[in-house]
Length: 467
Ligand code: HEM
Image (cartoon, rainbow, N blue to C red; front, side, top):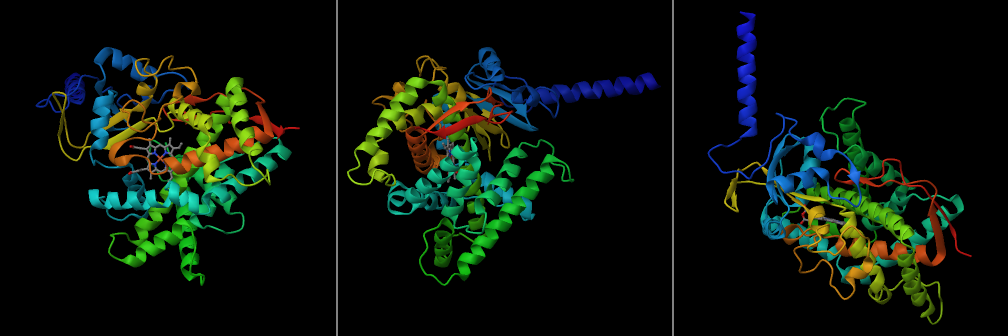
């Protein structure tokens, strides 16, 4: 009898395994393997590898199945896409744009129904962001001055301490931009962003004290509370004109016919805090590492930035102007190269609302299409010696506009709305860093990927003022 039960269970498991491996048999799916039931190929996908390398997971599968293959990751059915034409076509579609991940995230926290972003509302939100962070508004607003001052102050402080905390400096830019002006605003903000980000990859959604998921939810609640306080304070303010992100959202809310409500407006501030803090902290850290490892790049950067200071007629210590920023040709080449090898947002995922036919295959509704930018950026067909950090490859080239093979800021309907703002912050930081300070690593700072960049042992540098 026992043998019969074991046999039946074994047969059931085998059937389950076969169904898992060959889902939706009535449709033609791309080649690939779904791994083990439920866990799929998650473990292999997230295993660490080095900064200047294509993930062994991707390499193996591209060799075996070609540029498009199926797999299963974190409980989701996925089709990975690595071909520039297919990626470009996919990014043009209005399917689950990146902004929606955040609005969904905070809805999950507050326990309400799922909020579904329509294409027209997505366009409206994008245009709001683009307007706030456009070159014109960065040029005429307080942004350049605020970023410049916060950078000087933090670099000065780090030089007396001998160590850096890039996240806190970026938190100061962010606090100023959103209008959060409590005492110790930057510390409070960076502490909660750190807790949110460090625990974000929690694979098991178990909300009990001590788990990563619990810590992530707690940090996001703290951030939401801080955002609520900022909204209330700005609403109660008697001064009519302000120039912060929250003030502009309050102005939009007064229009009443945009579809924006206060809950969504607060989600957008959370989105702004997390994306800016993470993208810029990572960029600055990576730039310091790459430049320190490439003395010729440092020398060229110093030449460019010292020339800017020399060209100032009166006060050499003036804040950077927009014209000076635009003139930083080599710096822009360094930033292009840093985002190419950095692949700071390595994958661009889209959940399919309906079946989609691609290249003779049918990808079912509910599956994810995931574009991998690392594979493009390290392809020798598009970049000579792709694993070399070589800013000069960008000489006379435009960078991310109009190309399907260089997509550090995404593309199409979900193209990064903070790209200009991000590049401005990195350039101002580099200006002050290379002209006034020297820095060196005090121990080996390993940067690894999995596939998101991480510094498993932190980033330790010694920094001091140049004589
Ligand atoms: C070097 C810095 C940055 C990099 C490399 C970067 C990269 C990206 C990428 C690749 C996407 C597309 C994601 C996808 O299609 O799934 C994206 C979207 C986005 N980024 Fe950035 N980003 C950076 C800085 C910023 C900053 C500073 C902000 C601040 C506002 C920001 C806000 C956004 C938003 C809101 C979206 C979603 C756009 C939409 O759904 O339409 N990013 N970013």
